[in-house]
Length: 148
Length: 138
Image (cartoon, rainbow over all chains, first blue to last red; front, side):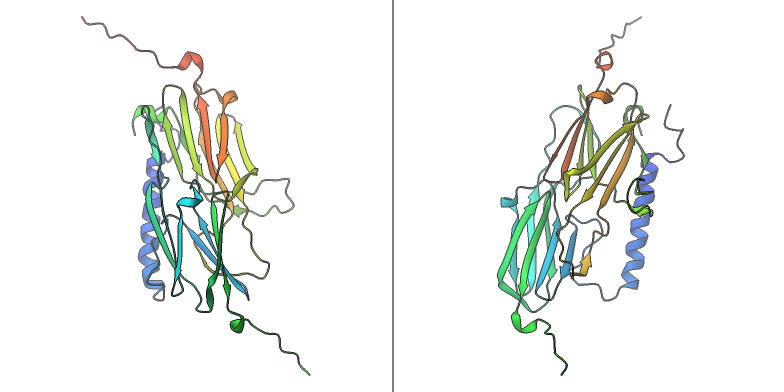
């Protein structure tokens, strides 16, 4: 009746999760001396994945609930920056039990492989994922060598 | 935690669970708990959940035995020969459950999905809408 029926109530769970994250960051800092200088703490909004193929680099930005026109994407010296702001409307009446979703400005910077061609960049937004595709320069592509 | 929060939504599970049966692969899999905002007003409970990459066809909302479960699979366009260079997101499956309480009308849940954000409205039963209780003095 007062939340005692479950062994862990949500607040305790949140504490546990935070502890886990802090520990992870603490250990991660030691375990990964080579982490990028622009890398960010876990749970930073928006999360990003980067994938490469022989001829292009794809960056996936998990940023739901945005107007794609309001997202700034720039590429300069192999640094891809994604910035914008997500405003969460606060209802006039009622009260929040949870506010976990990111609210406010955001910015992520990713270092791309050096052979990317800054003139060949495109971006699309679907179902809350921004996908930025940058082509790699021809010369850098792996070529198949025929064995005679 | 105050009493009001207790009688509204309580989480029953968090980040992982077995894969659903009826799929070709039945190995257990990790799920990502979507970030949520939850608020309550005089009409009922409102839930927003960030589920980037999830389209309507890959979203599943279930209410059974007073538990609400939202589940979805993100679709990400990837070339077959792609290699991961960096990944914050390591699973494409979202799942999160909440325990519901009896005064919520689960037959009238309204769900909308836009740009990867799920919005649920769970109305309170008519008889459970707030009434002002007069406190008599004396």
